[in-house]
Amino acid sequence: MFQRKPTEEVVKEETAVWECSSDECKGWMRANFSSHGEGSPTCPICGSNMEEGTRVLEVIPNPRKF
Image (cartoon, rainbow, N blue to C red):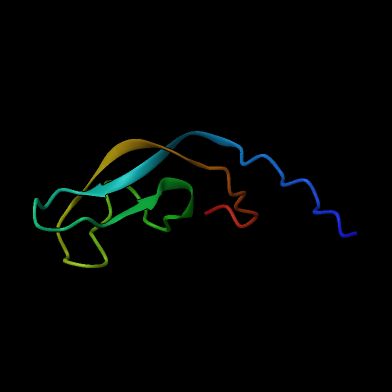
């Protein structure tokens, strides 16, 4: 008889993100994966400015901090 491995619990936490300010675009990115300098980045999809926000997301470590 086969036993399934117990599934690991997915850890989620409130995460800082950048969200596109355009109403027509749904682009967003995790803030800790963004490589922008000072100020807000531009949306890689539509080119609009992005605004700070938060989302509850699965924890993904970023070993390469910018």
